[in-house]
Length: 147
Image (cartoon, rainbow, N blue to C red; front, side, top):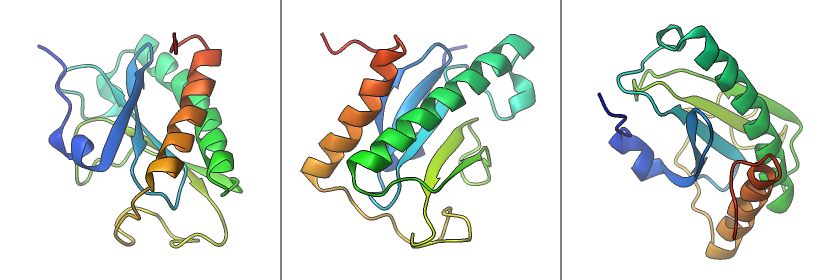
């Protein structure tokens, strides 16, 4: 079977790059530094669907994406106070992991960001800053080349 991205991700996020296991996507909500990791495996719904080796890779990619989220947040002027990591899947069942930068002054604090309120769109210049910051982290780690 072939990996197919759930349509909901195309509507709410933008492709950043492919990591070893996951497709990394920038969540399109300018209020938060936010990356979604989607393992590029067919029919994955739960963490337990991944092999042990894949789960280890996923954990390393979560840590890397956390660094990228911090870089995004700094680039858009919303430095991270706390990182939230979650694999919910109640709305979109395809296995995915959210890495979200949180601040005590953000719109949803201290509750969850999921379903809190409509996303705030990025301006084109802020979107480019966010993308560039994330890709610089991934490039430094050897997962992306700007050349």
